[in-house]
Length: 162
Image (cartoon, rainbow, N blue to C red):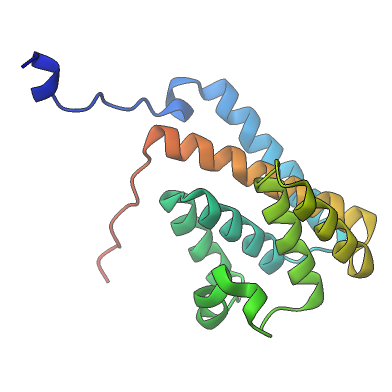
């Protein structure tokens, strides 16, 4: 057997720490996107729902932790967070939230052109052009953060002692 078979997996590089200028640019982009979303009339809860749904699809535990806490701070209910992965099967989300979530999913699965067409058709009925653009930008940005955290294997920190 080779030595490699007995060695531990290679340590992941925290790419945000390794390339701080690039990560800072991504943080600045996220700040601009949050401002764009607010100016377009997307409330913080809708933004966090997008962040969470994309992070669910990508399997990013770190971002799920961060954005679950952010959604709760923004006033989101634990009940809606609990069913977010099955949002289509509930009546708990507004038409605007449903449109934003569909856009987020279509942005994340960029190869699914049928989902893109359907998401746009739905969004056009309930969101303004500025809101559609902002929702897509939120999804694009959280997708980038998901990749940074997934490739870095960012750990989910333990809960703070109460």
